[in-house]
Length: 484
Image 1 (tube, rainbow, N blue to C red):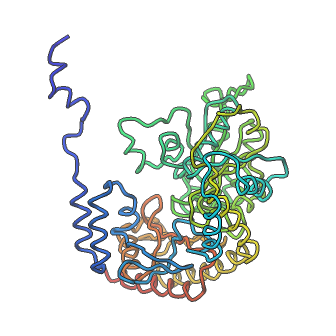
Image 2: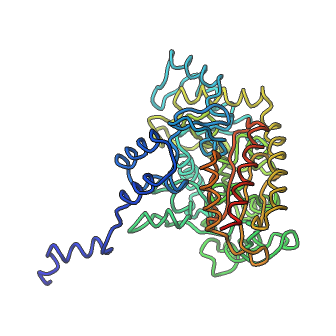
Image 3: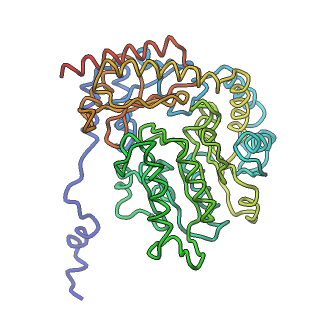
């Protein structure tokens, strides 16, 4: 072997093939410097950029994020006192409103007795497991496995499915968001994130299919005349035939452990499929003997006008993944599964220091109590309809709005296009409108498959006056966008 192989300069070319790395630190500092924020906010943002990784998601969610120091229900305030209508609610983590007084009281009272007790039993933990088993879909016995984040929970769901089934493959949809750990990134299938897992991502055992994104059908079909072609595609092209790497039909052999699906896609831009979509996927899971995992982390907890989004389809998933809004803003997640799936692991099969921690479980019990007492699922349906009708009125005024997603609670989005026939994404104007909304005091998300969707994730408790203000800000932003 040539001695050149061991030379430092040669080795450097092997381990770092990119000739130049971009210094995003300076780019983000320039963004902050040129942003129309108050002095306190800009000062804090400068410190933020200097002290944290340049990969922070906030500079992707916004061109420059505000520094929120206080929030109450559907309103938030930055370091300089500027008020914002909060149509993000911590990305659905504060579903019952920011700093709900009863959650604050529960946290205070529980903190006096016990905050945390490792991954060990406590009274709130036991009561919450019983509660989740009772209120999630499925007329069968269930068990719960606690974790802390959504990524933890979806990874646990996949682990449980593979252990129970003895099979390898997991099916997930393009555009899905199921977590960003090494174990979940492959099923998240979002290219913009995946490329940062260089030089390789752990994607062994995953296969993908198009989601039922009817406004932009991957197959060029129209709903409902399509007869759910997307479901037939999965069956005929992935599960049937001698060339399938997933199922050997003649021998009755399947390598599929589970399919994981968001009942409504969230991070991809708030996309609502027909109810028949989930029904079709459930049929496939029954016919081909794999588990159906439904990721309710963001779409659940009343957001869609049902306690769980999968209820719209009337299906009973084998495993449900819950998180975000279940604990009033505290981190907590879990999977709720058929009893037999979680009943054959020996003790020590799973452990996590903060899984099912006492404070989070106490807060979660209070969240579900508040939802029931204040009838927030019904309120989500009603205020969501009001918001949706306002967005439809905007669509009549502005041709750039190609699609309005809504009609199911406060699960709302706009898709902006240059032409309603070609549906060419209006990417630049979407970005302009998102920035303009932030400037005028409206927090929303810019996203979508082509960065041309505006999504609204308000608390179930958002007031009509806040909805009216949000619609007014949006209208003014669209007027300005027409002039550029």
